[in-house]
Each structure stands twice: as C-alpha cells, then as structure tokens.
Length: 267
Image (cartoon, rainbow, N blue to C red; front, side, top):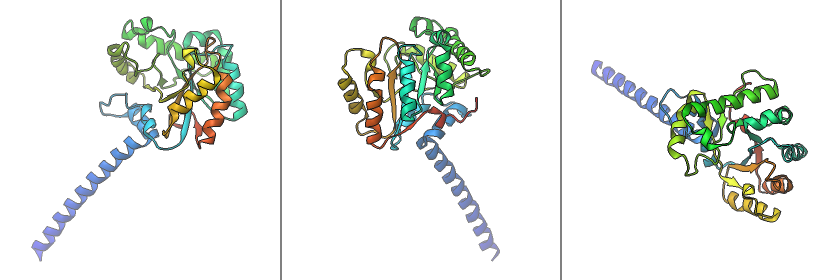
C-alpha cells in the first residue's frame, strides 16, 4: 500500500510537470498567433527576440480587418482632404508622419490626433543618407519626430511606439543599417511595421481606376490588411480614390481599425 502511494504521488508529480509544459506551449502558440499579443511580446519580452516580429505578425491573421496607413505627411494639399473623407466614412487610420512636415503643419497633426487617428513615426527628414548616417543619427530622427508630435498635439513626452522605415524594412536598400537599427528601436520601446497591401499611389503614373484596381489585386485572398497610401503634396490622387477604396473594402467584409487597437498604451 505504501509503495502504491509513492507511485501515485510520482505519477501526480509527473502529470503536474506535463500540465505545466502544456500550458507554456499553449501560451507560446497564443502569443505567436494573436496580433495584439504579438505586439506586446515584441515590445516587452524579457527574451532576446528580434523586433521584426512586431506588428507584421498581424498580416498572418485571417480576420478581415483593414488598417489604413498614410505615409510622408502632413501636407496642406492632401492631408485635410483625407481627414474629411475619413470623418465622413467614420474610419480611423494611422498616419506615419515626417518630423519636418509636422513642424511645418502642426495644426494638421493636432487634427489627426483629436479625430482619433494614430500618429506614428516615419523619421524626421525622410532622407536615407541622414537616417542611416550612423545609429546616433537614426535615434535622433525618431526622438526629434516624437518631440515635434508632442508640441503639435500638446502631449508631453509623446512616444508612438511604432516606426515605419522609409521605403519599408522589406526593401533591399540599406539592409545592414536597418538590421542595426532594430536594436535602436528596441531600446526606445519601438516596433516597426511594413504593409501587405497598396494602391501604388507614390508611383504617380496610375489613373483613379488603376489605383483602385491595384488595391483590389494586392488585397485579394488576404485576411488582415495593412494598406499603404500617402498624403504628400505630389501624390494628389490618394484622396480622389479613398472613398471608393473604403467602399470596396467594406463591401468585402473588412472592418477598419487603427493601431490604437494593438498598442495598449495611454498617452
């Protein structure tokens, strides 16, 4: 009887270990398959995890969510028109702003913020030679942009926590510098995000019909979309097709979100 009791206790101990291991594996699985937790894991992990996990994991989700993102603004020619349409359509977006343009047009950034859009960081100059001169320069570009955003929206020590590399991390330029920059982003409690859908508005050669068709093609058979658009003065067709783009995505069952839904941080 005594021997049987010891065996059962050993079995119970072994069973407890197996349960513990199972819970750990389930947690890891959940982290890598949940968009919001993937972000928090990349931001706050005690492990030496490359921040390339970041927001790009949400692209793997089958949920039909659309994240509209606008790069390179703000500008007086495009940003206000885009904001008018977003307000009319009751859609929240994310603006990857350039620091020097924020300084020029703080009222537009303040409007973006007050109307519930996410203000993210796209560097100060949008000039790769300056951005990648060295890692101190890279860090200064991010900090200086956040400082301009802070002044524009009236929030002390603003940090967006989200950066988009000019031309995207996925581009085949400055690859070694971008790898080094990941460590700087991590030290600043930042993650980066690219995109998986675009209308190619920055190429400045497409008609309104072609821009919408580009969006349709690059969104085909995808769940969650991170959509790249621009609100620069020289890319003036974005807002002319924005309403039809939103209508199309809604017709396909997409729900619009911005990165406030993923970054659980109070500014």
